[in-house]
Structures are given as structure tokens and as C-alpha cells.
Image 1 (cartoon, rainbow, N blue to C red):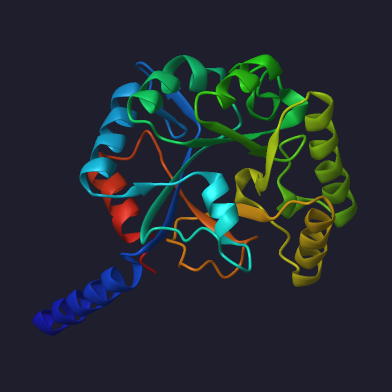
Image 2 (cartoon, rainbow, N blue to C red):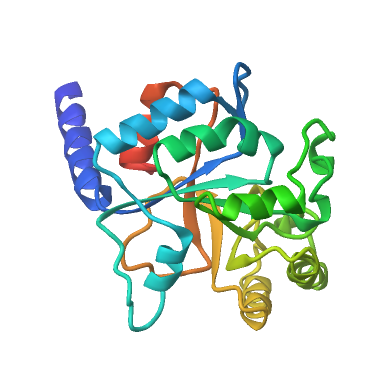
Length: 259
């Protein structure tokens, strides 16, 4: 009996591997520290180890611009079969002080999703424990291979708010980025991965984003996105946790969420 179950599991894993081996993987980082590790914080040593592995495993780093171009009807840009997009949420100052040297060492294009209400301030949504990059610091990253994109204005979990609040927040996100003269790519990552549960509200949110010119939305999900991308407002990301072992990181990257 156990042999039969093991055989079935092996077949499932083999089929899943071949189904998921090719596609767009999107990594979601938050904070980078020289020493500390927690759910949202990786060390510089971990980050270097991750990037080293991805290079050795022949993943092809792509930019957010590449992804957005691949969504166009004429598909002027075709994503590689093992495409890898690296993203950071919230625009923590430690992304500049700790992550930047390593990212430049590996020549990795990076996207930072910015909650514009907190630029130059603190992460008020999470206890005000960490500094957020200033507008000038954010602009300085653009020449270093970074892309800026939206992360709601006030870091709201769109799952928990009415559509009127979501629409107002989206407008504020775009308007404040303009006021700060931050050149933003037309994409958003949903804070906490949260989106309205109601299909009607979710469609209303998408329509609001379309009116603002936002062409893609990133959730969490931990799955590998099939190429070509089917739903540009439902792109999965893989959450990278400092508390994950290296073996867990490799499993997430190679397999995605199995069930």
C-alpha cells in the first residue's frame, strides 16, 4: 500500500515539475539585514546565496519592463522560459544600504513597490520600526537598475476595504508619485497580497487600475506564472522569508506551490 502511495506521489511530482519547470517566477523580498533574520528579513549572506543559486541554475533575470512588454498584444518581448523577476515591497532604506551592493554585483534588475504615503518616513503600518527610502534615494536607484512601481498609497489590504476606499487609494498612489516626481512603471503589488473577494468588486478594482494606466497587479500565491501570461492582474509571487532554509528557498523557486 505504502509503495503504491509513494509511486503515485512520485508521478504527481514528476508531472508537476514538467508543468511548472518553465514559466515566470517572481520573488518577493522585503527587508535585508547584515545580521538579523525574521519572517520578512533576509541577511545579506542569504541574498547572495539566493542569487548565486539562481545564476547557477540558469534562471534568466528579467525586468518589470520586460514583463509589461510581454503582455502587449503584439508581444514585442517574449519572456525566456525560465524567467525570473526580483521584487522588493515597501521600499525600506535597507534595500539601498544592504541589498544594493549585492544586486549590482549580480547585475540583477530589481523592482521596488512603493507605498507613497510613507516615502521618507517609517513603516507606520507595521509599528514604525524601519525607515522608508526618501524620494531622492528612490530616484537615485533608477540609474542603478531599479524600477519603481505602485504598492497602494497607504499600504492598505484591499481585501478589507470597500471599493470606494480602494479607488481613492489607487488615485492617491498615482497622484502622490507624480507630486514626488517618481517615475513609476505601470504595475502594482497588492499589500499583503490582498484583493477583494467579491468578483464584482475585484472587477471594479481592475477597471479603476485600467483607468489609471496600471497594466499589471502582483499578488502572493507562491505559484509559477505560465507563459504567456493569462491574467495580468493576478500575477503570482513567491514570498522569500529569512526564516526559510536554503532547501525551502530552492523548493519554492523550482516547484512553486504544489497543491
